[in-house]
Length: 249
Picture (cartoon, rainbow, N blue to C red):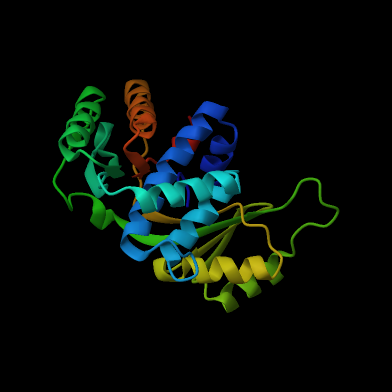
């Protein structure tokens, strides 16, 4: 997972301002609305909604806010969100996939094209870079700095694999990354929670098979600007890329 640390992304989200956290929840709310329209408002029978509620709680969203979003989604009939993936290249051929939810695909497509063009990249056709990524569920568990006892790594790995995880990685002491098949993410998360583990994050991710390292200062600057503008866009839910040294910038 070099260059693609989910843990750094999680810490970054937790350090955001209240306004930025509100934007994160607005984005999660749009995903919840799509999930409710597709599978109903009962988390017990809608695994996608159940996973999104867990994601909202991991981002410190109050239960009252989650309930309001569910009620709003049930009452909305005039707003229809589409899930659209955009693929392209950043500076020096960095592969980028942008997952969006939008009620106006023309607006979103225009904005995506503008960002890629402005910051030294180009928006490509569907499939141009997706073959470089594998879909996985990623669960993050971390040692509590204030806890008297740290997590037993061997026991956590055993519990994760027994729950159905496909891989277990601990590249940074005290930070444990658990990988699942996409369909198994919710079940593995729930079983680990039932065993008393605190889940920092449990989300679907796209893991690169190869990475691109940037050395030119202008490329690094433009890649950072591209990611910043994409992530700040209200229609963008997630951005996946294979920039090797992203976490060092």
